[in-house]
Image (tube, rainbow, N blue to C red; front, side, top):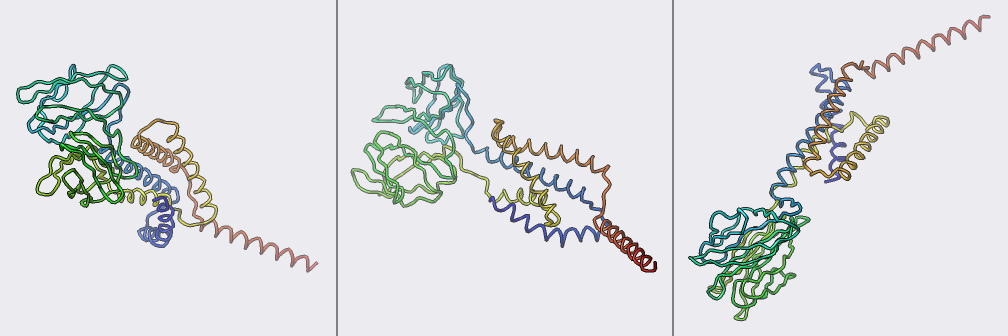
Amino acid sequence: MQFLNPLLILVFIPIFDLGLYPLINMCKLNFTPIRKMATGMILAGLAFGLAAVIEVKINETDMPRLVPKESLIRVLNLAKNPVQVTIQDKDLFQQPVESFQNPAEYSKLILNGEQQSLHFTLQHQGLTLSFNYTVKEKSVYSLIVFEAEGNLSSRLIKDLEAKPENGLAAVRFINGLGQDVNLTIDSKRFMAVQKNYSASEYSLLERDIYNNGKCITETGEFPLELGLLDFGASYTVVITNISGGAVETWKSEDIKANNVHMAWQLPQYLLISAGESPASMKSVLQAGWLLTVAVGNTFVLIVAEAAPMAQWAEFVLFTVLLFAVCIIFSIMGYFYVSVDPEDLEEKEEKRETSSRGNMIGLVTQKTKL
């Protein structure tokens, strides 16, 4: 998308010069150069404001940013009945977790140090079981509750702490069968997962529909369908059973997929390119325009590198600064006396004509003498 800004500027110059500005002149509007510059600032400010709104929308699918002594946790109930989960001294999971319930979001754990041993209590069909797990700060966990050989058990596993980069999708498997499995996602992805609810590592994949996988067990080879693995999402796929010659799975979305299309960048580029486009490509004007762009880019670099701000906050800062500069510029422009370049050319031509006449007179008088 980097080439789009200069390309749009080159496109807008003839459109403005041959279309927009003549139309404004036909409407008898006094659109002076000062007003053009102020309008460009407003358009640039609107572009940054729109960028801030889109950035906030993008961040809605990101994982929460953790600070020291904070962690995230959720419960995956893979048992057949609801389970009540209690963490000692923590006010979490007030309602029983239903069987194979996809958690809406993670719950925040406040620790008393860099790591803490927590006491978990599970209540299931009148039985109470207790477990101790050590949780580290700035980490994300899933507590898996399952039934193995008729008994309720649990396992605490680590999840991804941030979205997969470059729009990739991440997927891992939990083997709920009583036998080890070898999985083939596509022609390049192979993994082995041990029995009794062992979990694999995450694998990064391109966005696609994966319905041609294979699950190989001691009893044979079975087709494996994962469906769509979307941009920037993270998934946990639980292998629950093999029935009718097919593998039965349950898929949970750990991190939500990206839901903002890249085409939403186009309105920002249109606005800021319209604000940057000069009336013509005269050398002096173009040089000054490029100089201001260079100074602006330097300021953006300083803010991006020196100030620890969120992306959306940077856009809001630039929006406020642009509108502040626009107000100051408008006040200065109010007292500025605008000069039409055509009037200057006419005066210059008259001055040159008058000078030629005087020179001719001098030559004539000298000849007579």
